[in-house]
Image 1 (tube, helix red, strand yellow):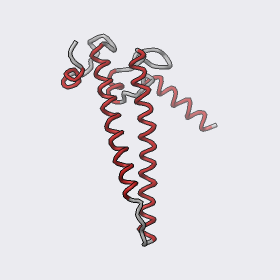
Image 2 (cartoon, rainbow, N blue to C red):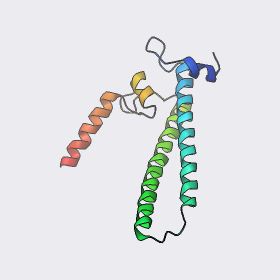
Image 3 (cartoon, helix red, strand yellow):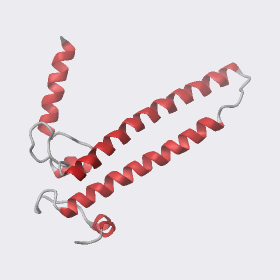
Image 4 (cartoon, rainbow, N blue to C red):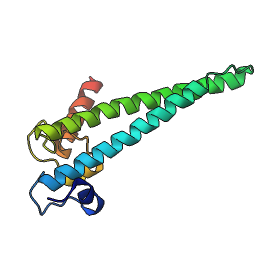
Length: 140
């Protein structure tokens, strides 16, 4: 088996190889860890920026604008925190050998879907059924 670094540099999962073979697992692990690293770096930058912006702003409109920016930044940070939790969950599924399989049906999730959204836990069909059921319940 190639090293994980060389696999991810030029490797792309394909349907003509065994599903979730060592190369695919290494590819998705690398993809998830890179994504998490980027989010954590962004988070650190956000925290530093928020700490720097705790200055007193005398003009009320400037202060309001600053508060709006901070609120938006905090909402973004919260979404990133939730995304990191989903990435950690996907990494756990990789370690447990469950990554890439639909949690509802147990069927493989398409490689195309996993490549686009490696935190996916359901196949596209199961996800669509789930969303239709949610929509019906919201309309009640």
